[in-house]
Image 1 (cartoon, rainbow, N blue to C red):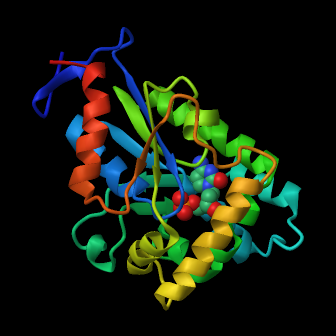
Image 2 (cartoon, helix red, strand yellow; image 1 turned 60 degrees about the vertical axis):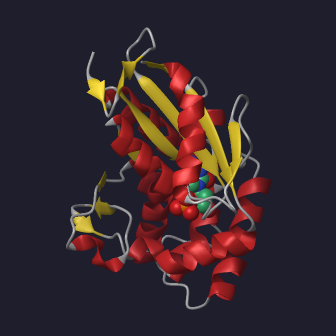
Length: 244
Ligand code: DC
C-alpha cells in the first residue's frame, strides 16, 4: 500500500476512498477539499465549477436563462467540454483556487464573474442539467485513481451517497461573504453577502437535490476556526478509515 503523507493508504476493501464535501457557498469547501487532496494524494473536483461553466456558456451562446430554456441548457451540460486542474503559480496570481478549461479555453476568472454568480442557481435548478452533470461526476469518480474528493451541494446525498466520508461545512453569512469577496469579483462585501444569501435560498429550496445535510455527514461550523483547525476535525473523522 502506498504511503500517504504519514498515513498508510486506504483501509477500504476496494482500496478507494470517496470523500463528499457539501455545504453553503463560501463555507470553505474548496479550501478544505484542496488541503485534503494534498494530504491524501487524491484528485478533487469542485462540482460548482461545472454548473458555472454551463451558465457561462448559456450567457455566451444566448441560451435563455429567464425563463430557463431547459432543453438548451441540458444540451450545453450534455456536451460540456470541461477540464479542471491545479492552477500554476503564474495563474494563481488572480486568487483563483484552480484552473478550469472549457473547450480548451481558460475560463477560471469568468466563472467567478457577477453575471455567472447571478444566474448559476437558475441553471443548477434545472433537473435535466443536474442529471447530465451528476452522471459526469460519477464517471469522473469511477475513473479517479485511488478515489476522489468531491465538493458541492448534493455530493453526499445524490452524487456519491455511498461515500466513505461525508463532511458538511457551514458558516455564518457574514463570515462567508468576507471569504467570498476575496475570491469573486463582487465589488463589496455587502454585495457578496446578498449574492450568497440569495443563492443559498435558491439552492436549499429547489425541488431537485436541494442543499441538505446528507445522512451520516459530519457537520463542521467554520466561523471561528482556521483552515488548519477545520482540517484537524476532518482528519479526526478520517483517521478510522486509514490504516496506520
Ligand atoms: O460552489 P459554487 O458556489 O461554485 O456553486 C455554484 C452554484 O452551483 C451554486 O448555486 C450551487 C450550485 N451547485 C449545485 O447545485 N450542486 C453542486 N453539486 C454544486 C453546485
